[in-house]
Image (cartoon, rainbow, N blue to C red; front, top):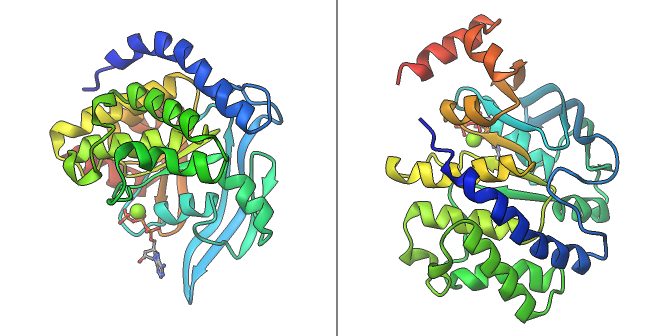
Length: 285
Ligand SMILES: Nc1ncnc2c1ncn2[C@@H]1O[C@H](COP(=O)(O)OP(=O)(O)OP(=O)(O)O)[C@@H](O)[C@H]1O
Ligand SMILES: [Mg+2]
């Protein structure tokens, strides 16, 4: 179902992008690092007995999840099961109330320096793109490198064009988001996240607001990222993507991780009746 055509282009792109990473790494004052080949421990993310409540509502229940560097994880489950909340806790868009979350060696606490450190390592792409409508595509991409990383304007523009090229829409640089298709806007959102040279990418249903013909162009970009070794957590119901790309599929229900398994096992021999029921529903469509 999925075209992996982008992968062929990936090796040349990857080589070309070393320049981009080098520039960003220099801007961060650290040696160049490829996606997934970062220094430090083997774990990108560690969640230990994480619990979260919205008021009285227990939304995340004893979440234990370790994500290795370079690992690709797909999270699925019924609406309201806590998928978005789980990934939003990883970059502190939501605060957890108990347990530990450690991202790239930084523990998430109320310490703003730790939160900043983590947010600078983690890129996030939302269902609804969240681009600034009054800024051109190029300016959307330049904003964070210029103002957060203090990259000079000319260099930020060069990086932005590299990444727009990578998501295959360099010709859209001067347009405003409202002038682009949904698939193009989502690719801008991915490029914008990549401009910060993240070590980890979180995706929350990146294709679910798109018309069917635009889904593939966004998934192809994500497949390319995965093939380059990016650590990825992706909430999606695109089971073709999960089968083709993920190392592990996680099924959540009612705030709990019910099952986590390699896709070969997850799709052919799900253990929990809840997983079986979910798969029967989702694969029927
Ligand atoms: N800010 C909030 N305040 C109160 N309750 C919330 C808040 N955000 C989410 N919830 C509730 O927490 C539960 C989990 O929400 P979450 O968005 O994580 O689910 P989800 O699995 O991502 O669902 P969907 O597939 O519909 O996106 C839902 O019952 C939701 O109503
Ligand atoms: Mg959600």
